[in-house]
Image 1 (spheres, rainbow, N blue to C red):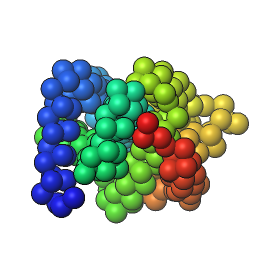
Image 2 (image 1 turned 45 degrees about the vertical axis):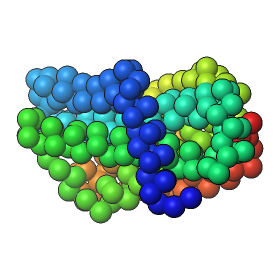
Image 3 (image 1 turned 180 degrees about the vertical axis):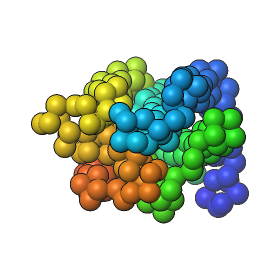
Image 4 (image 1 turned 180 degrees about the horizontal axis):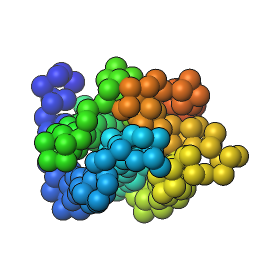
Length: 249
């Protein structure tokens, strides 16, 4: 299969993604709404003692919006689509055609990563232009955390897609993984406000290590080795298990 055909397959998947009225609304609406609502709250753009003298919009709200975006795509939407394709026999039919089913997997990843990139740029652009949000001070560290966090979260999503027998099951498993990560990763309650024994957990879970690594780099610091190491380990383990157990039929 040449690059042109791969491009057509990716374009078809992108159209299907956009035709689903819920997908663009969820992917675009929730992260931007989080940024807008919390960013417009009184004091969000001013230094706060509760945030160590930093600005809450930069040090918490913006990284939170991006982390939620990546987790929604990786843990709920991507595995749901792949499991539904398997359930409906799309992958089985492709395996008997000149188009290998793995190409569909690649096309889905490209579409989801493209959507993530567009919304990430929108969050940064909207926050900077409308809310006077500062850009990440440690841009290299921020990009490193973003890339590793994206790979790690999508490896978990790929494992869910590998194990879930149906699209509905994938949605249920994804939600069962997504919401505990919100609670334990420092989204609902900041890592600093979690009990002492849960703080390391927040830096180990994929969503928490992504969020807290972004928080560090946004203010000019460096991500902790625990956060980076956790993202790499999760990506390797979940990616390996997904490759082992993924079924096309």
